Structure formats: structure tokens, C-alpha cells
Amino acid sequence: MNQQATTIQAQASAETGIWAFILADMCIFALYFFIFAWDKSVHPEQFAQGQATLNITFGGANTIILLISSCFMAKAVQAARLSDVARYTHYIRLTILCGCLFLVIKAVEYSDKLAEGYHVASNEFYRDYFAFTGLHMLHVIIGLLVLGYALQFRKDKQAFSTHTLFIENTGLYWHMVDLLWVVLFTFIYLVP
Amino acid sequence: MSNLLKDKATIVLVILLALTLLSWLMLYALKLEPKTVGVLLLVLAFVKVQLIISQYMELNKAIFPIRIAFWLWTACACGISIWMYLR
Image (cartoon, rainbow over all chains, first blue to last red; front, side):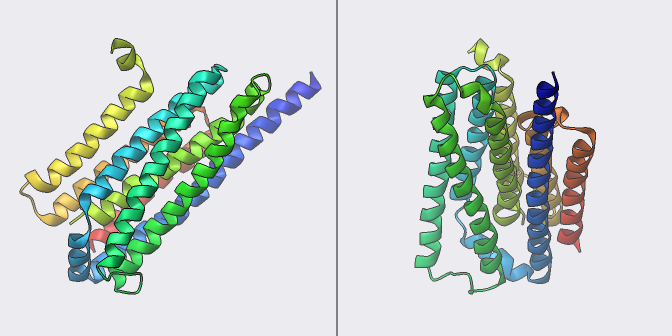
């Protein structure tokens, strides 16, 4: 009974820990949003010109891809809770596929910009663009590595149920990556 | 198809995609002041953020202080972003 109580307490602490970690990361990104808004108000013409050089189709496609990946991740978590290994594997693979597609589009977009002669030191707009989307891309890469690790749980069906908390926490992280992109896309590509 | 529509994750995805489409339409179809469009776009983005937090991240399962902290994050991030954009 004592052991069960200790396990429940440890799980609750782990859940609170991941929420706190995600909140801290989101606070750092909130600062990036504020910096971007500040710079945009200080250099309105430069930001308008910079925004006009971006390909909104790439940004929009990446937004749709990440939203779909979040749906797949939510379904993977549901499957993990039901110990449905086949469904879990299917949805985790689809989430990873979406993440990889996001990176491919981002790589094409970056190489286009670099080929056109824009880089991180070109001006304030491109400094913010490369810094904030680059940091977000780093989060996507970390998320993909964790998802790759979580995919390995399918191999041991007996121990699968013991990994549910890890899978739920991975899901929380992936949804955070998605929601941060929603704001970055709006600020960088859409807001006039 | 009916099973798909009963699934909460899919319904949330449809709403999120519809809001994304609305953002695009707002940008090109609405003949409003650019700053007004900007504010509407940011509000819509944070509505999507709140939807992801509440539905996909299942914030309601977290402890009360965490729930309050995430609500505050959304409100502050949205409010301060708009204020800085308009200044």
C-alpha cells in the first residue's frame, strides 16, 4: 500500500515537473514574441519588406503539418493509455513523419533565403526570423529524438504500460512545439 | 466517417484548421486597417494556443496552480504582444 502511494506521489511530481518545464520554455518564447513585436514597432518598414520576401505557403504548410501532428500525438497518447501498441506505433510514426516534413520545408525555406543573400546579420528582421525560427526548429529536432526513443517502447509489449507517463509527457512537449509555432507563424508571416 | 467525427482529437484539429484558414482569409479578404487586422490575427492565434493547451495538453488534468499559470501565460503573452505591436 505504501509502495503504491509512493508510486502515485512520484508520478504526480513527474507530471508537475514536466508542466513546470514546459511553462518555463513557453515563458522564454513569450519573451521572443515581445522582442519581435518591439522590433517590428521600431523598424516597421524593414519588417514589412522582410515579411514580403517570405514564402507564406511554406509557413502555412508547416503550420498545418504541425497541427495535424498534434492530433496524431493526442491519438498516440490515447492509444498508449489503452495499451493499444499497434495504434500507438501507427500514430507515433505519423507524428514523426510530420515532424520530418516540417524540417524538410524549413530547410528548403532557409536555403532559399540564404541563396537570395539574406542571413542572420542582414538586418533586424532577418536576425529575429533566423534566431526565433531556428530555436523553434531546435525544439522540433529534440521532440523528434524523444519521439524516436518513445517509438522503441513498442518492442516490449509487457513493459509498455509502465511507459505511459513518459509518452504523456512527450505528448505535452510536442503540443508545446506546435502552439509556439502557431504564434511564431502569425507574428512573422501574417501580422501586417 | 461518423467515428472520425466522434473523435475529440479530430474535431479539435478541424477547428484549428478552420481558424488557420480564417486567419488567411482575414489577411486578404478583410478591408480593415492593417493594425486592426494584426490584432485580430494575434487574438485568433492565442485562441488556437488556448485550444491546444486545453484540449490536446488536457490542462484540466493538471493541478490548480499549473492551470492558473497556463491561463496567465496565455493572457499575458497575448496582451503584452498586442500592446507592444500597437505602441
